Length: 478
Image (cartoon, rainbow, N blue to C red; front, side, top):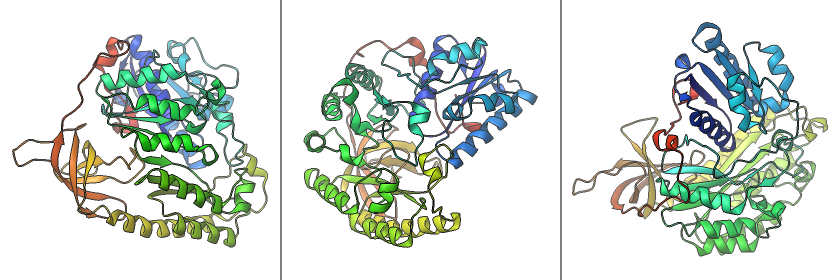
C-alpha cells in the first residue's frame, strides 16, 4: 500500500482531526511515514484562525508541493480550517493539490486519497468523531487529548471559529467515557478534554452541568492520574463545576479560561460582555473553592479601538489577577471576522509594544509565584528526555498543561537504589530551583502505576501496532 505522510498544524483540536484521518487510512492498510521524501501521499491539515497561522499553513502546502513536483509524492491533499475559508482558491492557485477536505469532511479522507473526491460543495461542518472512530495517537503514550465537542455558538467579533468549525455540538456522554476508558487501558495516564468551549458541553443534548457530570464520571477511571479540560468560557463556570473539581483528586486542579481583555469597553466591542471587576470576583470564587488551583488565561492586545487607558486597565487587572500562566496575542485583522469592520485600528508596532509590556508584568508575577514551589515535594508525570537537551528530562505537575505551560526539568532521574524513572512514570519530585516560567527538581520516589484493565471495547489491531510521534522532519507525523 502507498505510504502517507501528515503535516498537522494548529491547535490540539486540529491534531485530533489528523489522528482520526491517520486512523481511517491505517485501517485501510496504508502505511504512515514520518519522512516527506518517502511518502506517496502527503496530507497537510491546516490552521486559519489568525494571519500567522494562515501563513504557516500556506508555506507548508507549498513546501509539500515541492515534494510532489520533484520527489516521490504522487498526491497532495489539503485539509482543515484553511479549506473552509479558501476552498476554491486552493485548488485554483496551487495546481499540485489533488483534493481538499474541510473540517466537516474528515471521514472522507479515504475517498480523497483514492482519487474519488476532489472538492465538495461548502456546507456547515457537522462531523463529530466517536469512540469507535479509528484514531492513531500522535502524543506520547501516557497523555492524550479527547475532543468532547466541536464548533462554537458564541458571537465573539474577533473569532471565525463558527465559520471554520460550525455550530456547537457535543459528543455523546457514553462515547467520551468509553474513549477515555480505552485510552486508560492502553496506558494513557492523563487525558485532556478539549473543545472550543468545553464548559458548554452537553447543553445541546439537554444535559445540565454536563462538563461537571462528565468530569465526575471520568474521575472514576482508576488507571488515570489526571483529567483536565481546556478553554473554559467565564460565564459558563458554575459552582457545580468548581465543586466537582475540588471534590475529586484525579481531576487536575487547573483551569484555562481565556478572558481576552479586562476593559469593559474592549469586551463590549469583542461581544464578550463582563468586565475586569467581575472577573476578579470569579477568580476569587475559583480559588476559594479549589485551594492551590493553577489558573491560565489569555488576552488580545491591539484590538480595534483599544486606547492606552484600556490597556492600562488590562495591566492593572493582570497585576491583581496573579495568574499562574498567561498568553498574549496581538490582534489579527481577519477579513471575515466581525471586528474587521470596526474603526480605530491599532498600529502593529503599538500592539507589539503592548504585548511585550504585558508579558513583562506577567514574567515578574510568574517568577514570584513559582518561588513558592521551592523545597516542596510534589507528584509529577515524567515526560521523558527534553527535545532541547536530551541530557535533561522533563516532567509536569498537575498545574502544568501539556505543550502550553512551563515545565519541570529533572536534573536526576536515578534513585539511590539504582532504579531509573521512565517516560510515563509517576514520581515524587523535590523542587530544588525555580525560574521565571519553569521549575527544576530531582526524583525522590517512583510511584507504582495503576493496574491495567480490559478496554471497554477492543481497539483495532493497527492501534496496537502504531504509536505516532510528533517533531519528525518537516513536521510530518509518522
